[in-house]
Amino acid sequence: MLRWLCGKRLWLGIGVVMHLVIDVAMNVGTFVQVMLAVYIPWLSASELDAVWRTLMSRPLAEGEGDRPKHKPSWKASLLRPLDRLRYRGAREPYVVHHAADEASIRRVALLRMWDLGARLRFETDPTVPAGALVVVAPDDKTRQAGAAAGRALVPILPGFWWLFPWCLAPGLRTLAGRVVLRTFDLR
Image (tube, one colour):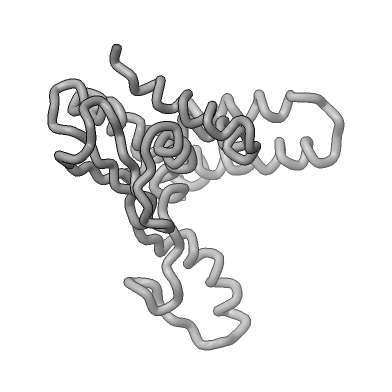
């Protein structure tokens, strides 16, 4: 009981709810966003890791994996949102094909550090030229190289989420992909 009443879960939760109500009810500019950003340093590394695992995973369907299948009732409708948060599964990974030279291995190691959700799988491919990356997304299964490969990495690398609106604009798609590839360029 002491852990819940004096713990950070309760008080950070109350603070988040309070600031969200302030954001909805009042016009105070960016005050709410600044105050919510201050809560992040209160989280431990394991709590931040749990947040990333939740964001990067998918909810399991009822009866899939460990998630129980509930009979239709009012209790089941209350448990479904909690079960979606509790029972999660890994998404299918993107496959990054790379050459076996030293520069490509170093580039892949840098790319691995940006992968916070463990969504990338790396494979050495002799058909890929030195210094190039080829990405195969799980949904379309086509090999993408160059700026298209960089653009394919935007949705799964949180550091590049700010580029996602650029990927929607026809003229800026190539530019967004080049920005991602330039980040991992070791020249």
